Image (cartoon, rainbow, N blue to C red; front, top):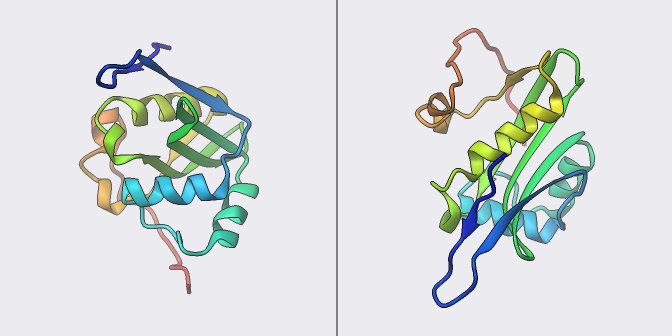
Length: 144
């Protein structure tokens, strides 16, 4: 997959590094969610920690030591993969990082898996990545 280089003024280009199999620190995740505007329980560190402890597929994007993106999923690696979170820090949005995170989730989940997600606030974004909008879903809303 292509390597993206970020260019800061008067600095050397920084490559975006994608990692699978590591969980970023809870504080880094909370800061990323704040920056990305993702509605998650970002004031509840223990809950964020549990969310990642119980996810079996996490891909993160890094610019040096800075966490700039994350995709968190639950999958059986055989039939379905639910993309729970996709977040890219605001200064790094619209650079293709989200697209690369999804591509890596799909690669790790395998070609037999259907990628599912629910993001009502992003109905215009995901179709640009080749995803189809479906109307045949059901939920039981969370209580808290």
